[in-house]
Length: 86
Image (cartoon, rainbow, N blue to C red; front, side):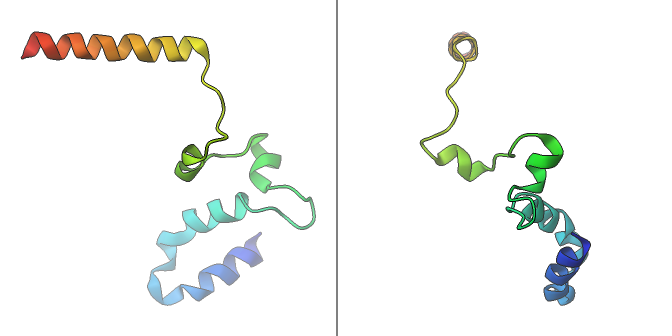
């Protein structure tokens, strides 16, 4: 891992590479590894981290009915509060 990160950061050495370490680490941990055949984040955490772009895809996880109900109740409460303020 360290050699790979060093190689990537060396490309950006003139651009303040220290600020790029978290992004490079995330990119490394979410890329499939040739030896294990899986992503290091999955091996380490047991789940695959999601990115904002993943939420735009159509195959996202279904919403639990309780969470959906809570969201609807929250929206109604916000609407009622907005009407009372206006």
